[in-house]
Image (cartoon, rainbow, N blue to C red; front, side):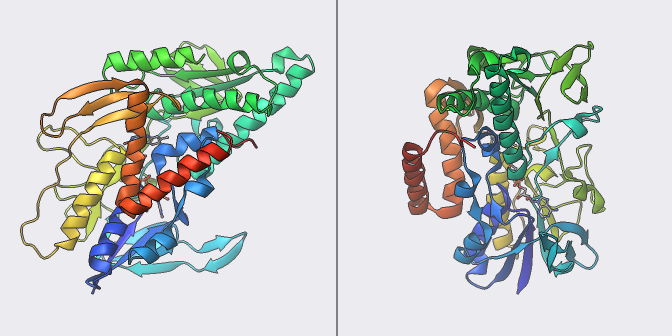
Length: 433
Ligand SMILES: Cc1cc2nc3c(=O)[nH]c(=O)nc-3n(C[C@H](O)[C@H](O)[C@H](O)COP(=O)(O)OP(=O)(O)OC[C@H]3O[C@@H](n4cnc5c(N)ncnc54)[C@H](O)[C@@H]3O)c2cc1C
């Protein structure tokens, strides 16, 4: 029986493990192993809602072990340190909790290896960015941001109450006007208001919490049509958020972001969301990588001519043969590639392998709890329509439902949605501490 090892249980990896477990694992045609450094899965496109306190990851997270038990795959918790492609094995770091070693350094043998390692923040070598700016790469970082935001609001509220108006305000600078930066800015503005309503801080959320989005390009959301970018910018400004486009960040210092003209943008919190690159591990495998360290894959998502290694999602570079452009680092791509690989690996004895085809169904960006903006592309017609407002927000919510559907099936997804809806009625709209 072949062993298929999938490294990374993110948006793509967990869907693949679930599907392969259901097909090959259950019928004992292959042993399917999922490796991740974390014990639970959190869908990355929702990280900005953890950073704003709207979403509690403890409630939303899916335990890998539980998913594995239900879908006939095995879960191994561990950080992959290296991969020996000649010996076909994956090396895992020792697993420690509170300084206590639970499991030593180990090796997992594989027959087929699938890399779904995701991406990490790209600081583009901007001086001081890695040292002083926060990032939103995982749940831990999103939680750290939330705690610092709430603490900064409480502290500034105290100063204001004591008459120290200069310190009675909070500045948040988000570098990068892509989906992550825009979605976080909108959610934070709503979070500041909710925290004020619950008297967690004594600030006027509109005047005393100053959120700025700094974008190097002429428009926010560069992947969308300029009309949609303008619409998003108008919406952010209506929330009191400063939108600074055409502004390149030259360096980051403690307490301020400096732009290329030398102007300082003071900030209590700085978040770097200007782009992503593949994790360093990708460049250490002897496989061809691009300038973002993404593993270059062929039309079957096979990596650099190694017949036993596949890569997909954010950590892979797949160029659409029809368009000649690279598929973007998005959950939509990871999902389509996971479904493709699940099929390909289940039919692995078929001599002629099909090619992966990426279909762009559009892109939606949340602008807070009540609005979104984006474009939808018809599957058959290929025509695109612009969408916005509450209807787009509803469609945006469906993206996560689609991910849950791939993991849990219809009945359980419906149950999850019902529980979420009930929770929304019972608990405050944001975490209060
Ligand atoms: C705030 C935010 C908003 C976004 N919004 C959208 C959106 O609206 N629409 C959209 O399509 N996309 C969005 N994205 C992008 C989307 O989240 C990614 O494209 C998608 O998650 C990629 O899936 P993946 O499976 O490749 O990697 P990931 O989902 O990042 O998963 C990678 C997994 O690999 C694990 N891992 C990594 N290295 C190791 C190692 N060495 N050892 C063990 N485990 C490891 C990680 O723990 C993680 O679980 C957003 C991203 C962010 C951060």
